[in-house]
Length: 141
Image (cartoon, rainbow, N blue to C red; front, side, top):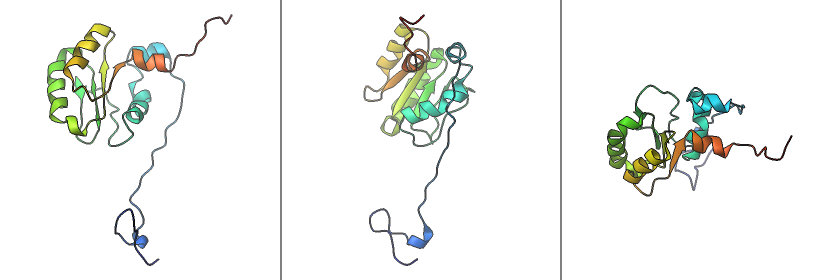
């Protein structure tokens, strides 16, 4: 094919577009296992999507916190390491879209979020995640 793309980039049409696709399986996860952090790999794509669906997916629980350069979000797994996490987030604030903090304590979550840049949305894991997907069963026998 002849010609060039006019509005995307000046590359020849014959070169195609530089795109990729990711396919995810939607599955039901036991809320108790999610709440215990045992289903992190299963919910990792949803966290990535909530953060804008760009960059790398954080799908491993192998550190106190994760903030890979390739990702546009971060996750604090160990609240005892919050100061180092907050420092790292502040250094990269312009390139970050969302933060996740794993804690059962609302007070701890609020304290940590209070130290993060105010313009970066934050979610408490796993309670906020579980509330999002909770099915209203009141009034049903």
